[in-house]
Amino acid sequence: MIPKSNRELNRGMYRKRVWLPIVLSSLCSLVAIGLVRYGPRVAPLDVEPYKPVVTLRQVELAPKTLYVASQGSVRASIRMPLASQLDGLVSEVTDIFIEGGFFRKGDMLVRIDDTDYRTQEAEARSRCVSARLHLKTLEGEAELALKDWNEMSTFIEGEPSPLLFREPQMEDALAKLMAAEASLDKAQQDLKRTEIRAPFDGRILNTSVDLGQFIRRGQELAVVFDTSRVEVSLPIPLGDLMFLDDAVRAQTPDSLPFSIPVELSGQFGDAAYSWMGHIHRVAGEIDTRSRMVSLIAEVVDPYGMVDKEAGGHAALQLGMFVTARIEGVHLPAAFSLPRSAILPDGRLMTVDEDNRIRLRQVDVLTFENESAIIVNGLVNGDRVCITRLETPMEGSEVRLAEAVDGGMP
Picture 1 (cartoon, one colour):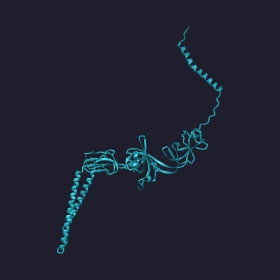
Picture 2 (cartoon, rainbow, N blue to C red):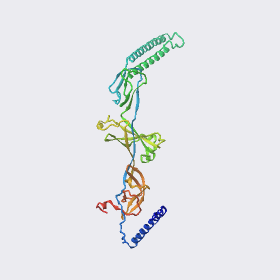
Picture 3 (tube, rainbow, N blue to C red):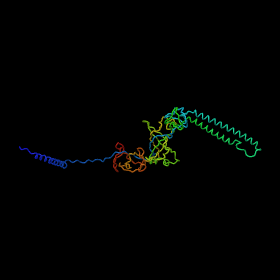
Picture 4 (cartoon, helix red, strand yellow):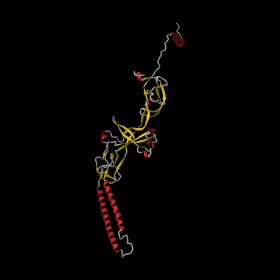
């Protein structure tokens, strides 16, 4: 038997690779054609169109008070360095002169050694007594000179010299007496200033002197602030001014201070607290970077030092972050709907008596948290769809959530 050559083997393998796929494809095509032409037919199903389930809200006109939201940090209405008006050694520091210490107006905080100032006061008093005595002496001499002149005037011609009646001397003595009295007043004031007292009801932020320290005139002793009231700067967009009282927009001198109520809220841990205040004024300029204007809110007695009944309430401390709810204008009639009911193009979906969607263009005055305030585009009794649909279509039918749950359709 003669073996096949390699060339004949390769030719046979090539024929198999070419013709085998062609034959298999032809067979599959014939089978598919047979199934399509002679196979069983499937009847089409009658599918009911999809009706999304929605929740409706029937709107009614009602009075509405607008509020403007903001936030800010608490700051002191009066914050000042407490300075010495004298040079001297600190001889006493009271117990309330500490960081965080509270004080009342007139409380002594620091005492300066008054030995030298008592001496100065005594010396000034002595000079004052001497000057007064000298003036009295000259007045007596002038009285005697006048009496002598009256007795001798019939024998002497001409006017008497002012020196005769001690007039220049008395003017000099009077000036020296006034200077001595002024020196005494200054010495007495300096003696009082050795006791550095609180200028108002307040609290100490920090201190910078202690017992035994020598201080100079004008040296800062502590930083204090007034606890009778605090302020919060509340930035708002310029457009929100239209929702506030006309006086805020006008900002005339006669309209200050304002009395617009504002509620401040803050937290201490998990506990939430609120404080009532009022808008006192508007900042003098608009922020050039944010284009916002700041309203200055004022809260009276934030530490409950006057109102003892508020002692259990948390203090509104400096630096605390708070949110604000500022009372705005009062609308006699408006609609309020969830913010989610407003579509991106400014329209909303109403549902007619046939439960079909009707797209309605409305005028949204403003948004408050999760609510939209609408002034035009709706009438009393309109049923508004508050369920968000992916592609709302005019006239498409919907099912009501109440009907699905077993209520009225």
